[in-house]
Length: 418
Ligand SMILES: Cc1cc2nc3c(=O)[nH]c(=O)nc-3n(C[C@H](O)[C@H](O)[C@H](O)COP(=O)(O)OP(=O)(O)OC[C@H]3O[C@@H](n4cnc5c(N)ncnc54)[C@H](O)[C@@H]3O)c2cc1C
Image (tube, rainbow, N blue to C red; front, side, top):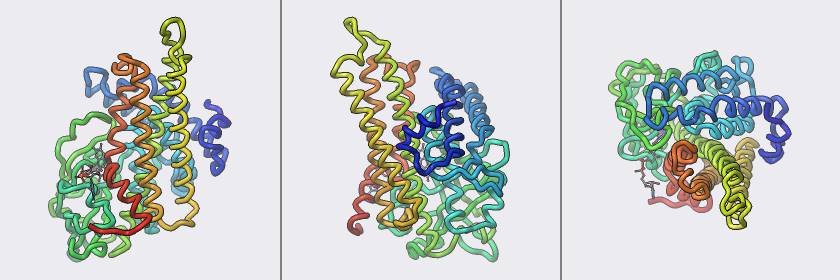
């Protein structure tokens, strides 16, 4: 089992985590080393992209992570969860992403989708969903924000929800939803809930925004074929979602006029800071691979990493990863103290967005440099770095991309509209 003391050192002392928290982080790390690392290439179906191999590998690993408690980790013990802290959860997802960012995405989305109900204090909804999540089967959820006309627009606080085109109309005791989403992770495979970002009327701005939980078997909800992507090919499923007169009970709306818009921005902030853990895990993995490779590989009689030029690059990788992790932990702490407002308000949204932009840039830099230090071996499928590079690019692009993240960073310092 990975030493808890070593993990505490890695996570800057992990001062906010209990020993119980650290034990599950350590169990996850051990699982990743034994059950994911040797099968990383199979998650892509091998070089020939064998769908059957990819899916079987994903299902086996997913079940294994459920068995050691990852899926139910953050939920209260009264619902069958393990009650680990949010801080420990960040460490857990960094460790999973060290093995595979796509699996971290698929599993992490569940917690993200439950967040609106938690923020709104909707015990009735949580009592419906959480016992399913805390059972012993693997599950999935979907957060449907992005639309064909734009993802960044829907997340942009200065647009006040006016660009959202998925319409929810109240008809008696039911919402009737019509619209079209594109790209959401978990689309078509989610079996617990689809948190769907709608509007009752785009002209109402923030007052119109409506977050509505749609059950996976709702009549009128259909999907396109999954998109074929550069990375996370089989671990994260992305499709279009079509809502054609989808009827859901009135009580499935998370909060109400005005409050749903605030919760939308909270989940954007939380999604961005959550992305940092995924990115850091992949950066750490690339660093570990290249440290080992440059130790074994000799050029003119000395290991590559003994050359000062290369030692300088390895040192810079460590510096960047450590500073990115420190920044991400600091922003997480700011959120969890509750002293700085909501994660969707300008101050914390600015910090979450800056952290995401910074950490993703560093991760891409680390993966790219790892490839350089390994020469052609870094470029080859069999040595794993190329898979990390392919998988992590989307971390930078989703939730509005780096441009939206930088604009939201600026919005923490002064307000502007366009
Ligand atoms: C693997 C994967 C997983 C995903 N998961 C999810 C998910 O779970 N849920 C979900 O809802 N969506 C998801 N998405 C969609 C993703 O979040 C969006 O594609 C992303 O937010 C960007 O939106 P877009 O592609 O429409 O680009 P656009 O919004 O068209 O943006 C295009 C470019 O313009 C920039 N830009 C945007 N606004 C501004 C501005 N005001 N000023 C200057 N530049 C700007 C952007 O940064 C980008 O560079 C996923 C996508 C993929 C590929």
